[in-house]
Image (tube, rainbow, N blue to C red; front, side, top):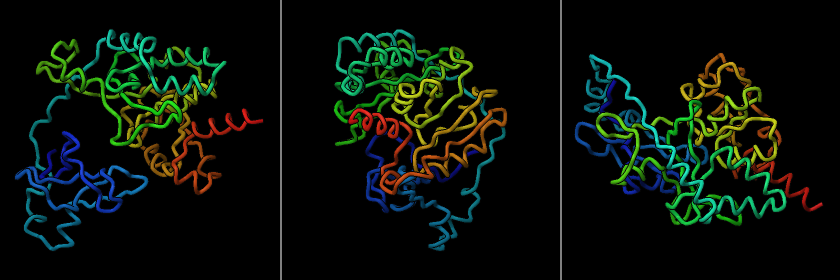
Length: 326
């Protein structure tokens, strides 16, 4: 199926605009694929789904403004494609790229690891084992950057998510821009790259759960699924009885990604204010997963904690810091 009106594909920050509702630079506009022009400045979607949620689709815009010439044309609806194209095989990243990032852990600053070292001090030696288990690496993209490798259950490296943290607070650096990047994009611009691509020399990304490579190693543990990679690491430190995996994003809890969890006991730990979203998504996951959703955070959280979007990792940290003050 193909559409005439789609959200403009991301190319750079130049095609991300200020949201008409929250005024943050997090807004993607709809374009007409037949003309490559924007439908209207306000027609689009804000990526801040929980804190903003603005979405003004072309259909609503045409109806409200009575622009029937666009709305009722056949071109607006799905274009039938006679033959469904074959799904492209996904690409992988060579193991030596991950190994190099492990070496950088010893020779370069890693802000996330520095934060953990300062937080846990005398217990940090045990924490290094967890970092090694999850293959957490250091990236040279930004000074102090961390790379979280996505390795599937067959030990194929799908990509690496690069993020920069504040070494004192452990929070992500979002100013003057949100410091998130991808290893496969770095390889795409490297003339000496050695990466598995398709026959057109194109990298085909197919993400998996962060920590998925541990499923066979820890095959009897209940699985806890959280949103962020940082939270998966923290939860592994504080509650090692579970195997903690991360989706890497609010919308990444999908049937395709979680099929690998069939026949396992799984508990979802959504961030505050994301409970309803993940509860809805959970209905579309495989019925072969023994699935539950953790409700306690949503039930007892304060208004401030909900506004801040606390997750299970934040509560583990809060309990730990309170204990240290005793």
